[in-house]
Image (tube, rainbow, N blue to C red):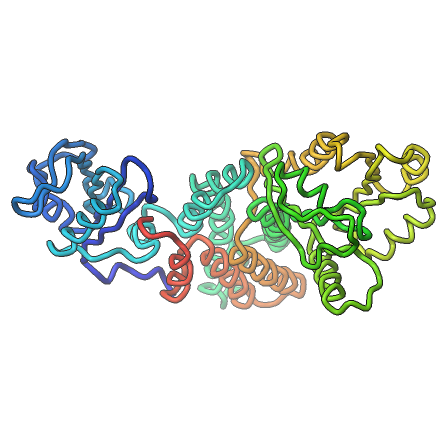
Length: 457
């Protein structure tokens, strides 16, 4: 199904800034944007040029509401591609609501979530991947997430996919040309060259799909599980890392019976630290439930910090590491905690062949900065400005389906199948890549995507 078109000629209005600031922004977009704005404003706007700002007053009849600046954007040179007005007024919630109510009474319709960006997409100002990047940019909480979203919003991802689609369109046009001359048994496309080209495109799809694991981590934060026996200092470590007393610290074993999660940003990467219940055998049903949850959170973590707070033998620590059951993708750091009350040097030396080991004291803060540097170094190279990284599960799914169709196309070439069968698989690849950028989409998909946006964007 091709991209839907605008089905409504309504003019929409919504606040485009959060509450509590000194200045608020209200947006209007649609065919009557200028006339509706002019009906409440003291200056004429109907003949105003685009990219011009006008200082005046807003009134409801004789009742003065505010002094404001109205900025005019002319179609198609606006965010939405429509006639558009932005009203900068004072940030009082009362003023904003009064102006919005006045605009609605003059003919505007309250905008739905994401409706401005949806119109920008439908009017060709953004492709769908860029539109989704707008929401990611607004939600970004770290430098890495910001860089990835900004790169995607500026079209880096779309350019890459357009290049792949152009190559595929060239291939399928040659194959379909052969169908017009099927009785003459001619080949316009060299089969070996086609196979290599499809393999190259498949490799690029695979690289993009493989980047999703990194992208998802950078977008949502690196999950770091803090695990260990009761009283190993897990809650103290969490409090020290985030710089506040978030978790209860007690000498009583089993104080933490559920996980506590807090985030900090290290070198542009958001780390989500998860303080878990102490790992031990217990008959306490509540504590046992907390331990099960701890294991579940640990299984989802990208990095696991195992705290050791007493002079175990290296063999005992290795046993504890094995019991964690970590996957090869998970990274383990063994923290020898409370080094202010016991000598950690020998154990640290004996464990160097088993894991990355760091000696520290969560109570005094010794070694905490070194731990932060170690964590940031593990992820600092990710999310670089020029790197294309997939962060959206919808895109990831489409890339996997495109890769599967490419596999079938390559097998069809290897087996000498007819051009029409090969061409059909390539059209499937084009379909899946088109779903990412919005060349092919449905109203249901658009509704699901834009419903997650904030009002006013």
